Length: 219
Figure 1 (tube, rainbow, N blue to C red):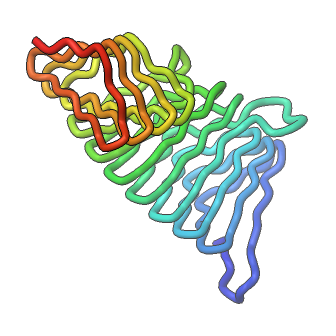
Figure 2: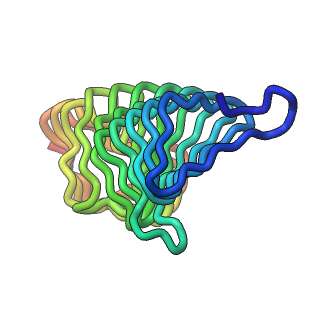
């Protein structure tokens, strides 16, 4: 149980060939994964785990908990998160060189995938996956009501938005030449841009205050 029960931060470092099972991270606690393996970690409010190399298996991220997956400086291999569940208010950040596989994003949970990172994920209704460089390294399935958000600087093009997916272009993001059908929603948030959108067969487009959309085809 890694936290701050007496007012000072607790920490756990897991080095190459080391392993930790059933760790509980609470407020002020942190885990640094540097080549070993941790299994079944529970990250609660105020807890933070860094996976700079090695593997984190079956982690659960609760409200206020954060996991950061990356390729650490001088690391021999990337950090990997596998079979992670992100609950309401939990956050998984995947940075360049990091990989997150088999991720479940529940309602209110957030996975942030930066440029150079890879992920496979399921996004449940009300869950959000935020993408900064959509491409072949990013694969996700979803339930109706799931949210795919383009982060600042991201460009998403030639996507089919369907089956209840809510695709959002956030501030500084651009959505180009996408198609929305069958209950999908294309949403342009304040500061976002969408161009050459085709909305048909039950799809819809929504432009928030401060958002810009151009060249829309409806029908």
